[in-house]
Length: 423
Ligand code: GLV
Ligand code: MN
Ligand code: MN
Image (cartoon, rainbow, N blue to C red; front, side, top):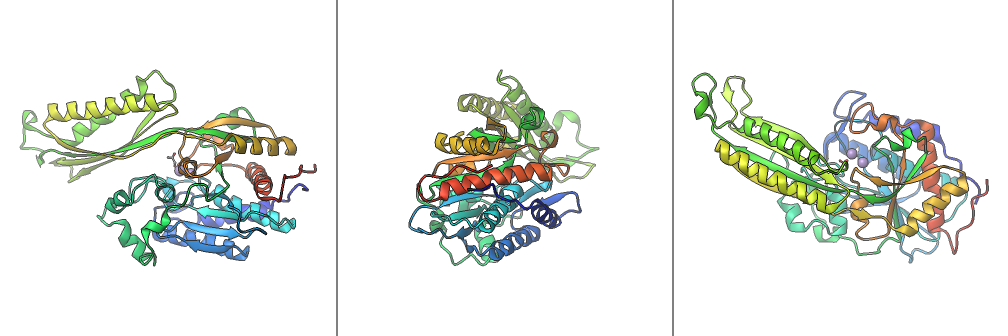
């Protein structure tokens, strides 16, 4: 097959247009799950899918599927995709590069006259980010069966609304949640294009990372209940201040990661809310959300145990009641060696440097790997920065990633054994 022509200008103008669909003014991108901005962003992406002639369907939790029908639709399709929701105060590339980039890859393949034998399917996953329900990869967890329906139904957003409320708002209420789960090997492969969200590719001046393993994440939610009171009237020995217990817990979380001896353990208390939130009132309630990860399961689990025991010791000493919820405790994913080899050989044929790497961020690929052969293609991002408005990958870095994705999709969907890329 000839080298494909990626229209970088078109792709970057789409990325720019999608970045303007945000709950906060530019350059901040905020698209909390099922917010008005998230719904508009879904409509924006679907319009491009329609323009490309893809057939679109949506499952009962809003995962979007856009299919380019292959010449043999009986074969299991090749899938690609990512997410377009964004945490508060995010940038424009996380997830988006894997969705709009995949659409550009499909467009380039169509313009080159390529006809896949296997269908190629873009998936736009619901809630990769743990915004509304505090749990990441909600859509892909349900697709893969990693999250049970009963746990999904028990999820509540900060206003106390459940998934069913939102499903009805989206017009998905009539669809059965049971139908979301996909069968094992319903796809022959899943390949996700994403920014690295780390500094390695940029530092080493390597254009492409091929992911072999995805780190094991876990998320805890802690609710602390103390006793409120007048900031002037209640003397210090009598206080049961929920914020102070939370502050000690956040420090214990940091310590639990720093003391594993593994540079790969990372722990973050990313949410800390208090009530009543008045300067002259002792905080009576606090909510913390804690994110803990490692590439090795046993190291992550040991740190998790230390955090749990610190929470109970601190709360006992401070006479605070606590409720601890483990929102997710996931295992690492091992990517399919055959797919890692396919992407590696595409890079070789395109004359591009590549590096095999670990993903320290989690992705929908973590769960897709449970049902089909999976890998990821990483591109560099400036300073390794992500989850910030100044997140940046250059148009040419994105173009290279899309080119690798497009040729990979071509190889995986083509009839018989795939041909070399002519340079
Ligand atoms: C994904 O957004 C992550 O937090 O790794
Ligand atoms: Mn993210
Ligand atoms: Mn992402």
